[in-house]
Image 1 (tube, helix red, strand yellow):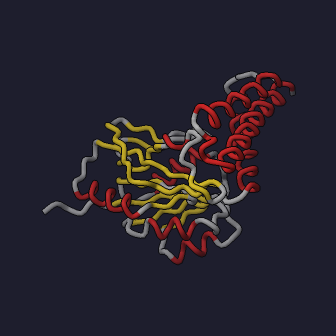
Image 2: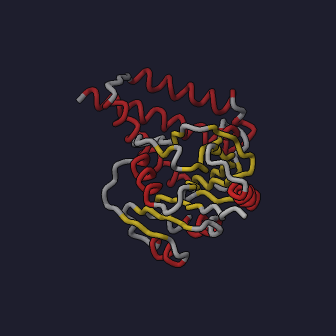
Length: 252
């Protein structure tokens, strides 16, 4: 009889009291839940304690890649399911992961299909329909890179796709989206500046317009209705901001 394969669900978070309970409920089948908190001052930690999580805290923020890399290393088990606080494992995905572990092949990592919500609505187009992100892997084969933003898992093994859905509750309101855009645009500009990239105001505007055309027209964002239009317009602002922040840094 094969030994049971153990798995750690790994989460990084900060001030996620509005999301974390839903996330934890969806991974309560894991053998361990590791929470790496980077400075919450709300009820996030108290909620995590209710679920018996292995809680680690740090006040030093070095970027998303470094935080997730550290969280993976803090896990007890080699099999890792990385999940964000605003994500939720569907019942079908849970069953699929358990099935994979029961027939383990440590030389395979898995990208998971994400179905995202924006302002409470499922977004089926706008480019989000092709959202597969690597979530399930054996850390003997890899880990998160150390990118400050837009981090991802790098592995040296075969990668397969899982069509069972991971729900992604992105932005419940406009304020949340705007705040996230400001944070990510500043981090992206810092990264580009360190790489000695340059831009200008005209290019910032042009790239924003191209983003709108890609999301709303080419990727059928208009089929997502009013929310699809808002998402495309907000994405224009994000692209403009990260380029204009870079322009400002170069000016200084």
